[in-house]
Image (cartoon, rainbow, N blue to C red; front, side, top):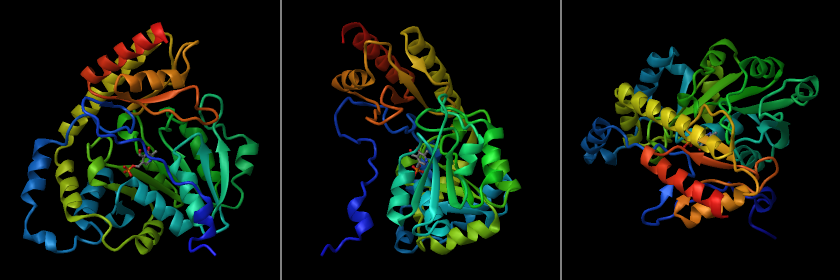
Length: 354
Ligand SMILES: Cc1ncc(COP(=O)(O)O)c(C=O)c1O
């Protein structure tokens, strides 16, 4: 008899983007920020490496919640801090969807959602995005929401980078009987956001991260806003000390450096638009992106796999999935201008020779 739960034995684990240690590699595969945290954030972190590290951190990251609440217009009790946004997503599954209950997510989207559902033993309901990777809230789709305890929506979507129409998303919220989690991991690169839905609807949670726009992927800090009732449930199931002392303090320092990070976001968005135009000139189809990555299909006869392999051979890593609806595309994180120049040169070479 196996010592492992049947559910866990049968499931596949989430596959993170590679983190190879190869010199000179251009890493455009995990949507990290190409710019470092601000010097003041690094200084604050260095200053906090002292004897206090023997003490546990504040279990509820109260100073950080208060600061975030002030910025975004929430009471601290309407905010929870996680060990990355992934922690928040995991807490939502644990708190809102039991074994054999229904968990829904739009597809294609973030491949962690089905993994979390599998761990929980939840019944998965796939909600297909339409041919433009948009939500079309037609009756057949809304009917699938019946009895669903938890719905994940990525806004803007990943891996497409597309901003989902708010009216359609709102119809899903209004139709859903359970909790709707809007995963806004990339929203800092978008023109709008959906935080107002978390204020307006008692069944909505908006989840965010410091990994992307705030250059803090290595520190693992995410947060979520929602009604007191939902946030209290997340607090019940979270690990007691889920965010380290340094992570809390560094994130507070990050919030004091708003202009620095907004400056980086602007640079990244400008580089994104330049990359989109250059790829379009080479004959690529690129979805309109509101994120720090682009999802692009190479011109025939070059396949996405050949493009991915060709880039890899030139020490440039992007992300490609051998899966329905996405295998003709590769997802490319936006790096520095210099990195994107190298990427575009390599892409040109591949399209000419492969
Ligand atoms: C859609 C989406 N949500 C959440 C996350 C996780 O973010 P974090 O690094 O805060 O765990 C990612 C990471 O790439 C993501 O793509």
